[in-house]
Length: 115
Image 1 (cartoon, rainbow, N blue to C red):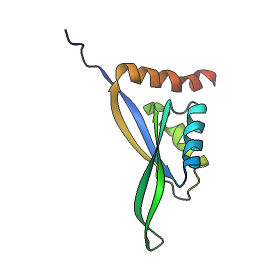
Image 2 (image 1 turned 90 degrees about the vertical axis):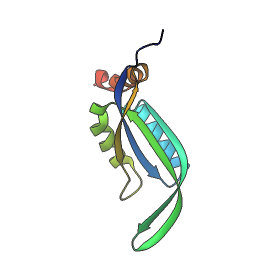
Image 3 (image 1 turned 180 degrees about the horizontal axis):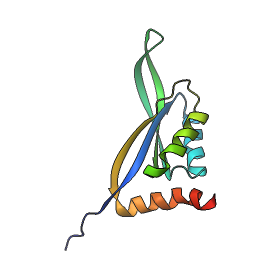
Image 4 (image 1 turned 45 degrees about the horizontal axis):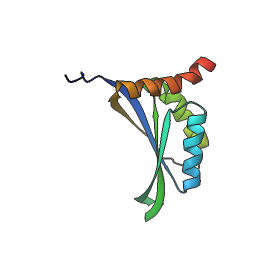
């Protein structure tokens, strides 16, 4: 017999930085502050226009998983700790397996219980 599919919303906030060290610092800082349950770091190549010039650069993407209701404090923390003048901050809502979403909630809500 097949189990029923139960999905729950989680928020995924994405940003980019210039170095692996910066990415690791943001990822570890957000998880340590219990603003995100999990952060993933990956190398990418970005193509963009900046100050009138076409640019191509190696960057590092940081994906942070959190609760929809915890996006605002995470967003504020990222803006305060991000090394870029104009950071890419993107938000999307994903639907996750309910067991994974419960784990995300447990990790992020620890910060709420501690305050």
